[in-house]
Structure formats: structure tokens, C-alpha cells
Length: 111
Length: 112
Image (cartoon, rainbow over the protein chains, first blue to last red):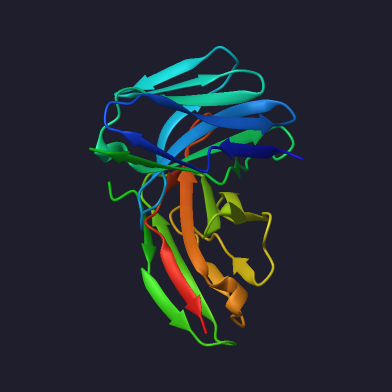
């Protein structure tokens, strides 16, 4: 059974204080790992797709990396507007077209 | 492009009532999904569709039904609403793999 565990559950940072969010996964044949950002009261917003170990993607202050067992979302010099819940999901061979989501990490960045 | 739209935004149902949550996408995506999100529990897949006329169950399908008569629309039907169905419901779509899913703004449903 495909599983996704995100840590920490919540993270508080000062503006400019860089950190990383973790997404550990077990999947029978990874087809893709996805990162989303979700603001309160809104639907998740797609950020990145990673397909194979060693792959990296960047967007503004965010950088996603992937190994065979986990993915990291690195946040460099965060700003208050980066505050949101970050969700990780995997698509594996077993579940075909379906994603399995983690519970998310709530990030708060204080100025 | 409006992307994925959902109606209504909010709804309160009494136990035993029925309703349909509407979802429409204008991106010509074949794949569409319905999720529910409960606090601290992440997104759970209810039903999904890989194209018009084709639907399949997800993790938590009990108490729900779907249909997919067109590429654009993917309504979710709740029959005999129960308090356990109080949740936020999200519809999503995606183009053919490989691609991320695009989510609608959600419907907040309360069953009392």
C-alpha cells in the first residue's frame, strides 16, 4: 500500500530563516511525486512534479528534491507570504491514476 | 480559462437529505477527481474518472455517487446525508500523465 508521511506537522520560522519540509514515502513503483501549496479556505495549488531520484525543481524561494525514499521542500529566506500548508502526494504503479496525499505541513513565517 | 469551478461554495444539509456538488473544468482534461478533506487528515479520494463515461471508486466511496457524461462535468451526488459527510470537498482535473492536478476552490458541507 502506498503511503506518504510529512514532517513536521507544523513549522514556525522567522522571515529570512531558511528550512526544509520532509515527505517520506513508500510506493510500488514511483510514477511521480507532487508538491502543492494550500492557503486557508482554498484548493491546493500545484507547485512541482518530480519523477526520479536526483531530480530537483525550483520556483522562486522553493526548491524540491527527490531521493528513493523521501522528498524535501527547501524554503530559502522565506517571507510571510510563504505561510501556507504544503502537501506532498505520490502516484505509484499500484494505484494507477490516483494520488496518495500526506497530511501536510503547516508553515508560518513571522516578520 | 476559468480552470476548475465548483458550486456551491457552502451548504448545510439535514440528515437524510440529498444533494449534488457540481464540478466543471474548461481545460479539456480527461482525468477528473473528487476528494474530501478533513482537518489533519489530508485529502482522501472519493471517486475519479479517466474520461467521459468511465468512473471508478477511490478510498472512501461509500455514500457517494458520480457520473461523467461529458469531458467538462463531473458531479458528485450525496444520497441520504450523514454527519460523517461533513467535510470540505474538492474537485480536481489533470491532463494526461505526467502532470499535476488542478484543484477547484472547494465546497464546504455541513450535515446536521
